[in-house]
Image 1 (cartoon, protein in one colour):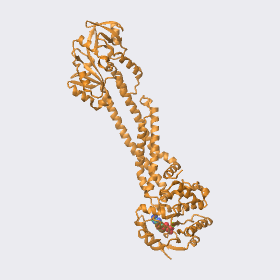
Image 2 (cartoon, helix red, strand yellow; image 1 turned 135 degrees about the vertical axis):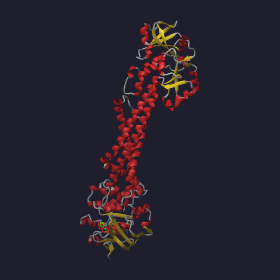
Image 3 (tube, protein in one colour; image 1 turned 180 degrees about the vertical axis):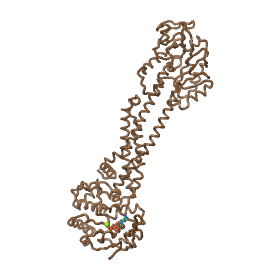
Image 4 (cartoon, chains in turn cyan, orange; image 1 turned 120 degrees about the vertical axis):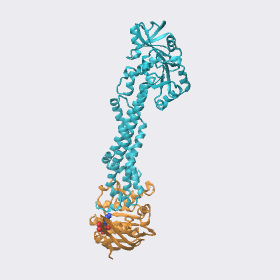
Length: 408
Length: 221
Ligand SMILES: Nc1ncnc2c1ncn2[C@@H]1O[C@H](COP(=O)(O)OP(=O)(O)O)[C@@H](O)[C@H]1O
Ligand SMILES: [Mg+2]
């Protein structure tokens, strides 16, 4: 084995490994904390994004002056706007619009009981994922999305949702789907014939109970509903499934530009909450990062300073035998690099393991290792170590070699 | 070889001035073996380290050949110490966590030399000093006499023209001291190295061919 600067650095570290552990502690713990937080938040972000995706619509286009309440109450005089807006959105090719679902809702009476008739376009007529579930799911899923720790996921699995959505791929002009509560009240089953406003419809589905307003809803084909209610070519809202990052990127503004006489909101402010949470977490992580870099550098500096102090005679000897400043620099910077490397790798491992173990308890999430954080950890640890070592190294290279004469 | 002119060194510590060297002028010719004696605190070590390019004088200058040492940039002065001078110190100053042979290789590290060559050269030096079987020992596993011989091997690593020794026998008993003096004598005679040795022992001084006496920072003979 060749004898090099590295040999010296490694042997010195090995000789004083106890002290190095304490020197490393700050870096390792600091990196570990950040990696753990980042691992958990990145997964929770993914989970939120996934839930938003499952949720379907997250943007609602309503008539000017309408509120989301109008939409839910669906009163007779609730305002509407032209169905043609759907094509306008589609033609604009705005990025981030994944799916659209135009709806027309009106409160009507059947056999003396008040129900909401909602006209929807099945997927085969819109080339889009029908997302009629969205508004109903919203109440239950919103809390979930914003506070992932309340784990109710099991009640409605992804597979269930997909199955239900698929079922709405086709909906004939004289077919209806009936909410569970109405089905009970009107005593109808799958296959029953149901007269509405003088026309007869076939019940092709009784929807499972959701505990929401959807239980009191009858879904019909949009165009059948328009005919029935006498409001041709009009809809009461369009639900849009937009992509999270694009929503924060001004998707709403772009939609407002092409649909000036409408009111466009995000459903339940999920998106805002999401963005706020992300910014808050990013800020917290940034502040934490700064603190950890400062504390870590200080602690490494402290350790390196002590290391230089206890090696004064050795450094004096090296200067005496003709080592130049840059060789002394190397001796300590190489040590700093090794500390940074070890601290970064250990910090990543400790942080990732903590996240994997603690994730399920703290956030109700399964956390996996994020490889990108590995490089990040090593780089940050290196910055901490070099920043902390710079001044002690500078001092080391300027030690008065006369220390060699001092009696031991 | 060494031309010392008007050399003065005044240490200032907490407003106290210590005149370690006062206006010393002398010449040390190539191949000589000089002993520097004098009572403790007379400035012997200061003189030796000034010759070795380690202490910036307060006044005067030291030239070696055509190099005026204290006008050289720091990096060239380091190279001068590395190539031209071999230091042997009273306290050996071996690096405690490196083996004997690694300590001997230390002065060769700043030079860009082949790793295998430096190892062979270091082992050769240890063998010449009778330490062939101690190459992989740590300093604390060696006797003091052996430690001093490792230090001499390290001083010789870059084949310097000058050996500067500060009380090289000060920590050794008389028989070990003689062994070390034999080595220095041999380096001077057989390898024509210039040896400057600080000592307060008359027996050691007697081995030199020239003796300088210092008192209160001044030459007295
Ligand atoms: N680094 C220093 N700072 C202050 N005074 C010093 C220093 N080194 C040596 N001295 C003083 O200079 C004088 C000469 O010291 P030194 O050269 O070590 O003498 P010697 O080697 O002959 O004992 C002494 O009085 C000593 O105390
Ligand atoms: Mg002395």
